[in-house]
Amino acid sequence: MSDLTNPLPLAQALIRRPSVTPEDAGAMSVLENALKELGFSCTRLSFGAEAGRPPIENLYAKLGSKGPNFCFAGHTDVVPVGQGWTVEPFTGEVINGALYGRGAADMKGAIACFTAAVARLLKQGTPQGSISLLITGDEEGRALDGTQAVLRFLAAHGEELDLCLVGEPTNPLHLGEMIKVGRRGSLNATLTVFGQQGHTAYPHLADNPLPRLVAMLAAITGEPLDQGSEHFQPSTLALTSIDVGNPATNVIPAQGAARMNVRFNDLHRGADIETWLREKCDAVGGAYELEVEISGESFLTPPGQLSDMLVRAIKSVTGRVPELSTTGGTSDARFIKNACPVAEFGLVGQSMHKADERVTLADLDSLTAIYLAVLQDYFGMPC
Image (cartoon, rainbow, N blue to C red; front, top):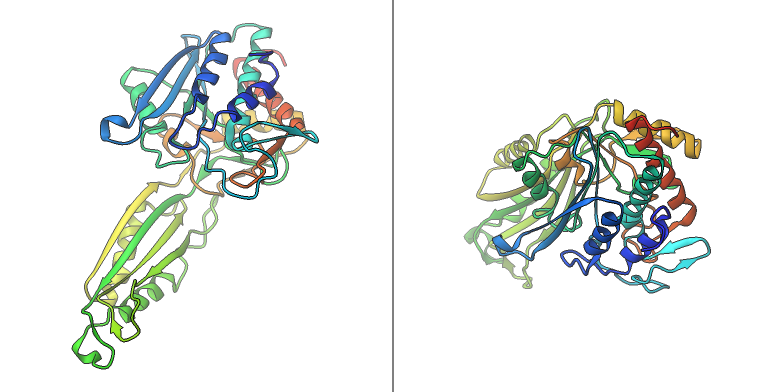
């Protein structure tokens, strides 16, 4: 590996590994080798195979043996390439001052920036404490065998995290705009309403479930869940599918189904949302089944040490004062918040998951400088 104080070569090396979930494609080894050059002790952890799922590669790397432990968390897995690319998505090309490739923004670029920040810090001296990286290959997937499993392993071995910075791409348009200090919860539900199939010419001999399904959906979507809270926007419910699977025009179907996603703020718990959905359906009546999966609860890390350090670092490097936000989807911070205070800050996310995903080289340099300033602040080392 070339000079690790420069984030670009490592970012390119990571992008060149097509680590589409659940495949690792050697990405974790690229990072492990770079961290070992800096003196990190690296523990590779694979989970999933024991449950009959594809094995997921994870990495916990640590520099130092004493507290406090400043942890950086992220993922090397990426979403599928999709269509519409004008460059090869796994070559890490630099074009007109920007690094192109799947994972450049989300979030191999940020991993390279943090590694470069640590390399620069070590040129100043040894921090009084520990620096760790918790890197998973299962963030873009079901997240069953990634960060959650690593955190359980760390807890079982008495390993504690004091603060954690997640390198997700948090900035909408410009580096320094936004820090995530919380996230809404997410609940997926499938509602199936049952009736009795019959001929449309003899509806009295059938039991059409669709009017009840429509009535239930009207009740569910008829009023907002809330008006928002101090740190969160209003909760939202989005219908994502309505399916009957009936190819005939003269048959009343035996059942109809709808799927929905609820993004809820800190006024609710997932179980409360499920209860509310069942109450709405019960009020309509009839036979139905509601399957619910809660993929994460809402959480908030109140403004404090970590967000204060980030704000100072961002302002010193970019001149911007970032918004402390809870918008967007879920991230692995929803698991880490149970272990220690956590915040998210990374690159600009405008192109993430899109064709021609890219980040500017200027932003890679600036993010490295921001991460370095945070580490210097945390460990009391001169800027």
